[in-house]
Length: 255
Image 1 (tube, one colour):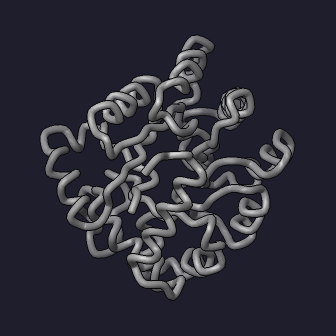
Image 2 (cartoon, rainbow, N blue to C red; image 1 turned 30 degrees about the vertical axis):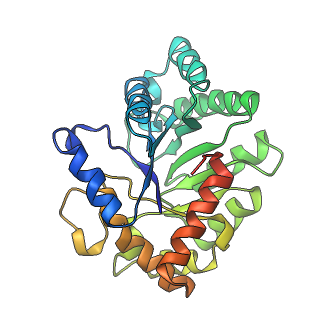
């Protein structure tokens, strides 16, 4: 399997990353997509992709940090798209839950990233929290479908999922799909087309139900994948291979 969205460069993994990777392999997670959230962490994601054959990187600025974006920083991120293991722009998007950056600034920065994605024909990794209607409208206004990218850690409604899929996006589910009260999210996962579904940890955040309260790590993704496989009525191995195929198709990774 591939962990389609993680942050193994974060300080929570300093000191035991080798063990984290080994446990992930033992759990069947053999590939990792590290998502940058600032210029600094995007660079760290690239460095990990050079150190580990199993790791790939995305480069971008998280919407909560959009107020830190500068023309020079955006140009640097665009230059990094030439790195051989940088496979997408992200994570980028809109987050109306947190208040670090105004929605206006978030939208302005996101439009800049849309332009970069269009120029380079690269997929996007979209962070969306309490902002699905706005980002769907922005995608419709800016792009002609199909839109290449994924909605990471999906938390919207069935209607949001259907609109994003119609636009061309892949949908990635994380640990919250295993939480007892998230019946609506499991129903959305059930309706997600099998050729558009991905699974992630968002580590070190959002561990699946059996590991809640712990630092999340890629090995725990097996719990989330097992939940999704059961929802889809598929054996775990078949589901894992399908999500790896979906990631190959979206990101063009050679695994």
